[in-house]
Length: 333
Image 1 (cartoon, one colour):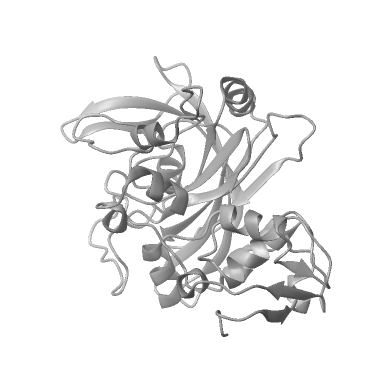
Image 2 (tube, one colour):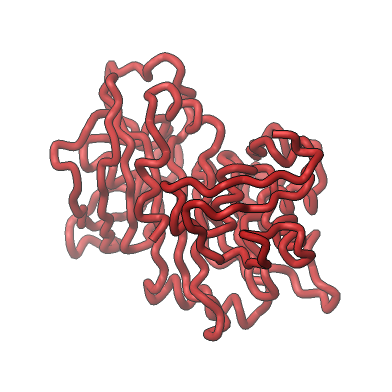
């Protein structure tokens, strides 16, 4: 495609019902959400000649007008700790942005970048948000957490009121979170529910969570569901994980408890004499794929955001010939 000229692109049959912003993410992953909004507001992007919104649903056969794009915009932009090291905080945040409005920001956090500061952490999402203080001095506020090595969807509030509403949605379990993971082996039951108690314990390697007995001091109930999407030829499986509760390291411990720990997990991968198949990076293969959360403004539609896989997981998916479309069926509903 000549990205320096206006082009007309027809919607395929298997893209029926897809939101326009997701369609653009699929075909032009380097176009950020902010850029997409500007192109829509100015009428440069049209569907069958008419103006549309990011949430507009597409139908097979419709024609999308795509204006001239920078060459880089037509290429995937995957953020890693290496690519952000020498860049300014504001620029990095902008490139991670998946969604924004007056109250909410949603980022695709790269693996290896901490959400909050701590011992030995010089840069985090929280510290970077200082660059986005508004004119009144308000700094965007974190609403939940992701482990440092887990990539994917991270929701941030722009205002104090939005933060209260969003954190309340997490606390009251009004939020739906979906994770994708690559597990060692294939669960015998292709889908199921894991219900345990978890407790934090100190070890020579640092704090970690373990399965506990009901009633044990400090133990919290943790519930997750899982579904095998596909299985590779070398005893690995692509699994969708949904946490019904939000305990520390919950999905990683539950995968271990299932007997199929997450590939590349430095804390909970406990299978002896098992070598990672060649071509897979020894990094945590756990990605916060999608989130659905009520908008803090009740007059606005539910926020529903999907985050592209990080580079090391794309490499693994390619290695095992996993088709990302196999996991997208529910995302198009």
